[in-house]
Length: 280
Image (cartoon, rainbow, N blue to C red; front, side, top):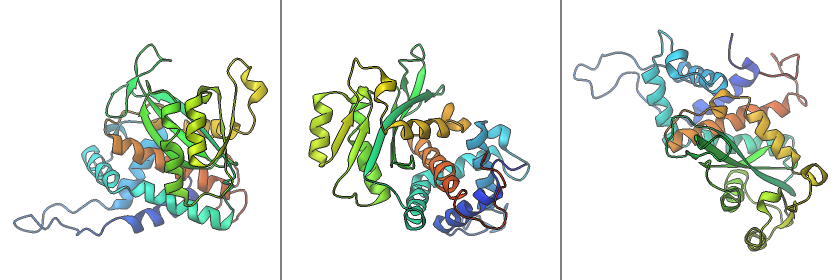
């Protein structure tokens, strides 16, 4: 059984494959020119999606036709090329053209997950007895579609990531409208955050410290739901990758598969469309 329905996997692979560089079937540096054939990108992509969804190690998702070393090498190459960032950008453009992004209301929030292997984006988690953890800061539109993602160690506070997160959203989604309101929780309730938002030219709805959170949830609940949906992927709940580029590779791949194509299933019909909205 595939890790994702083919109605989600096929469109993603078609665009993903268009972003891959052309490579020969055999390595040109081999002295005889006929050593083992290169594993097709589609085969490796299926294994990568399995690792993302189930959170299993590459040794467990490998098969006789695709070893764990092949998966690691290919993921490292794709991460260096920024394939999933480009894929996410293209998906956002298509989503904005067919459905429409609501960029007037942006919500930003952070989420801490486990990173037991440490690495470039790991830090001591303040909510997990000092174990290694990963923090991702996500900016979403008014419907919860992820626009930009910034990863850092779990020991980083949310407020220092407030500047890079809208900047990442601007790079992925393009130009922002003239009037933008950012919805934040009380972790951003500081003079420094307000000054930064004013410099960006945005207005802000920031929850106040000392007031119960449910009373002032406001419009930011969509980004909290986005974090919850992204945590359905095992690779994001417990990230064992040590390379920062590979961590971002999986974050943007999850954002594309889970959020962008998911919302289109309730608005459009095509051959092979799932009969249920519960897409796993």
